[in-house]
Image 1: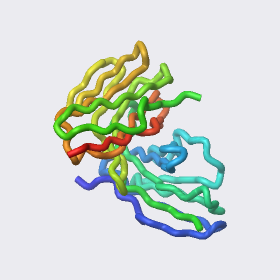
Image 2: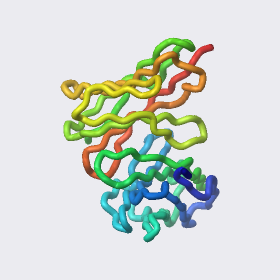
Image 3: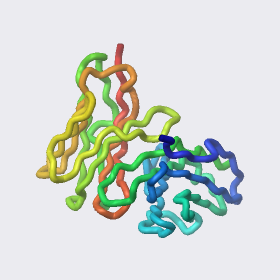
Amino acid sequence: KAGVTQTPRYLIKTRGQQVTLSCSPISGHRSVSWYQQTPGQGLQFLFEYFSETQRNKGNFPGRFSGRQFSNSRSEMNVSTLELGDSALYLCASSFGHFNTEAFFGQGTRLTVV
Amino acid sequence: GESVGLHLPTLSVQEGDNSIINCAYSNSASDYFIWYKQESGKGPQFIIDIRSNMDKRQGQRVTVLLNKTVKHLSLQIAATQPGDSAVYFCAENSNDYKLSFGAGTTVTVRA
């Protein structure tokens, strides 16, 4: 059974640019969550989608957005990149009910220069 | 705000010994907890979970203990191996479709 797949694995972008990251969940999982991981802030929740609907959103500026497609794949977009957006972006998938296991992908390492 | 935290940022353990990693949480509404292991360059790997109606759960070489009275969670690893060297995170959920993570404990296994 394939795990959570995130693409690309690494990205280097320039300040002011925008970026789109992709996540394919485990087959059968309908919930996709996104997290930002930095050395200073640790793992911070960005948003969660289930059946193409955002059910929760973290405390991030509006430059961070996401969406989910009918096949449960998800994308997140960051516009007008800032140096502080450099981080490991992690996607987790689950069946989507309360209190169910969430499994993470390898992450996308974004570096903003 | 409410957060999940770990007592110690680092833990050094002799190979073959048992490891205990602690986590304190402050959200009394939390009813589901997960331990993750993260190796360098990889995403967090699910280890074991526990629901608030339990106080102990065992897996392969791992045991999670939950004390709701003092809001404390621990992960015990039996017979620690070099492959157990990683950062360990506890995470909690309170039925809001997100996980809140602690800062992590770096475990180093000495040969």
